[in-house]
Image (cartoon, rainbow, N blue to C red):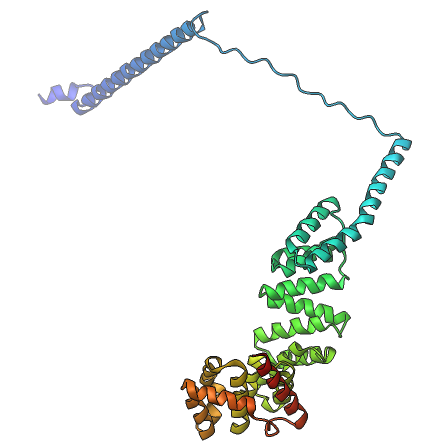
Length: 377
């Protein structure tokens, strides 16, 4: 047996090698079958696709919508170029129309202004807006319309129009004023202040610019700068009671009661119907611990404006400095009782001597005003 094994050829593979070869051959056969099957499926799909294409391509099988006939594009005639004579005639016509509009514009603007002054602001607005369509480049017209919008409290449109004017004519002061006022009324105080300073750069005596700047500084809490501009405004318009009143109010905010006092005294004499000035003057005296003068002014105010209005003043913190004074307490108690309040008011009307509060001239002026009011009542 050993000899037989020795005679076996050396190239004969072992049993394990034969099994592996059989497995590889079987796998190749399966791969070939799978490829043949995929090829057959592909051929079948191509055949079906070709039949479908052939069927759809036969006449009568499908309906092709007819294309609408294209409308020929409209050919705009090219205008013939103007000759030199025609061009000159056209330019003359345009200038003639512009001059006609310029001639009538001032009269129409004046008529609209008259309408607004008579109280017909809506009619004035319509007239100016119609004129604006006819003459859109007239700066005077834009400015007049902007001022009318300002009067009607249409501040945004006033700002837009005045800014349009400034874009074409930055040196026009009236447009700067309207734009600054519009911004101030809209509460846009930073822009208003910037415009006011621009106006003052070229005109230090512009009272309106000082007024707008003062309002802006007040809103920003810069009361010293506010007072500076208000004093300049009052100096430029010494007869303007509003300017004087604003100066006095600014001084009260800065607790400069001794400076506000003479201004408020002038106001209550010149404007005896100004209840707020009476209240501020009474507070001014109280802050200087002049209880007698404060009560005297409150008594005069009681005679002029009545107990219901004056009673509300006593809660003002400005009277805290004299609230413990007996004379002040008595007046407050009298106001709480209608009969006593009426009696106090009558005594205020009949009292002649006011020299303890004002100088003789001011006392006589206010007394005459009280007597005149009594005659009218």
